[in-house]
Every structure is written in C-alpha cells, then in structure tokens.
Image (cartoon, rainbow, N blue to C red; front, side, top):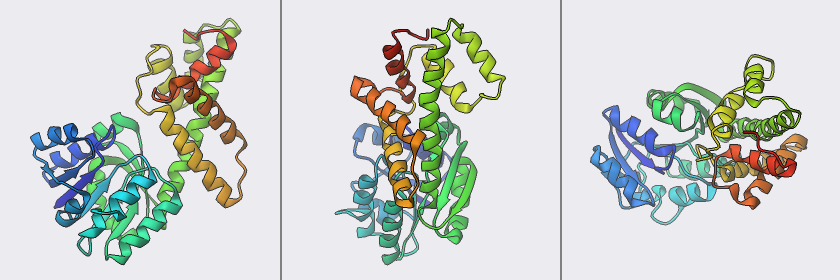
Length: 294
C-alpha cells in the first residue's frame, strides 16, 4: 500500500520507521530536512510539499504539535487537499481540539477523502516498539479499512465514536496526566520535608493504593536521576491542559483540580522549565519549599 507520513518529530519519526519496516511504500514530508534524510536512507521517498504526499499516498498519517499546523498541512496552500485523490484516508495522530478535528474532517469529506482523529498514548518508547494506545474518532468503516496499518503502530486500538471523539478521549487522558504530574511532585516534596526517605516512599507507593503509571514514570526515571531531558515536554502538557479546559468550558463542566494543575504547569514554564520533561514541575514545588527531593 502507498502510505504517507507528515510530522517526523519525537513520536512521528519512530512511527514512520515502523510503517517503513512493514514493507509499505512511504512518502514523507517534514519542515525540518535532516530527519527526512534519515528516513530516505531507510527507503522512504521525500516529498517537496504536503500536496505531493496527497498526490502519491492512499493513506496519510499526521503527527503534528498543534491544530493550526494540522489545518495548514491539510487545508492550506500546497496542502494535502490540493491534490488528494478521492478515497484517500488521513489518519491524524496529533492531539488537537475535538472542534478542530470535526472541522478538518468536514473539509476532507468535501474532497472525497476521509479523516480519522487518532491521537496516541504511550510515549516515545511506545512509538518505537509499536505498542501505542490509539484512540480513534470518525467513520467506523474507515477505521476498519486502515486498522491493519494502525496495528503496526499500536497494541490497543479503541473506536471512540464520531469525528472528534478520539481527541476528546485523549484530552481526558492528559487531564489526568496533568493532575497526577503535579500531585506526585507535591506528595514527594511533602514526604521528604517530613523526614521520609524518598526511595522508601517510592517503594511503598508502588505497592499501595497510590500506585500508578505516572508514579513509575516520573519519580525513578526523572526526579531521582535529576535528569529532565524531555520524553514529553511540560509545554506540550500545558498545551493539552489548555485544550482540556476549553473542552470542559464548551461542555459546561468546571475543572477545579485540572485548573490548579495547569496553573502549576504554567508557573513551571515561566520559571524556564517548559522545554524540559513534564516531571520538571517538581522543581517549582521544591523551590517553594526550599528542599530537593534527591
């Protein structure tokens, strides 16, 4: 099958490599050229614009940072829809608002193409290993057409409902991630300030009711190592928290904990930690208490 991939960042690049390794023809486009050189060396075909990808590919995957970039790549000048063939499927792994997803889906259908919002969870490791969780919104029969391709990228594929539902699910997930991210930092600061050994605290929590994937991710891999090289940046989490707040506002839901966690995340970005891993929010709470967890 002739595939396309646009957006070869931390997540997109390993996902594209997995598709390439599955013996499909892959046409790629990215704003940054060096990463395209890496993939062309592996057998991918370089396109000079998103429109060229739209011309060549039957299924096009996107993995971009913002809704504005998705709209530009799909609907803008020299975008995919300038040359897309009827029946083409666009699978968008970007985390954007449900409203943006619905709008872009509508534009695609006017051109005879289908669009699935299919954000992912599982981080860079999941992208590399092909074990992502993929939350899909859009036409269910379209998902059935491309499911075999999604199974190259992910272990768990969930059909959530109409267009926008995939991103609604992803924002619910990342709302919980944001709250847990701040709560973990606060809890460990309190524990150390109270004279507890942080390693023992981790051991206890890992075997108690407070155990979580976020605990096992943040504390041993980032906080204890004092290495906040980003797997998922704080700025990206803040972007998703803002999208979750907007979704809640649209639905008439008041986010109390979410708003507080977002406030802590914004404070960390103001302090210069936005480009670091999201767990760097710990530094703000350490500074306020004048202690360091480790």
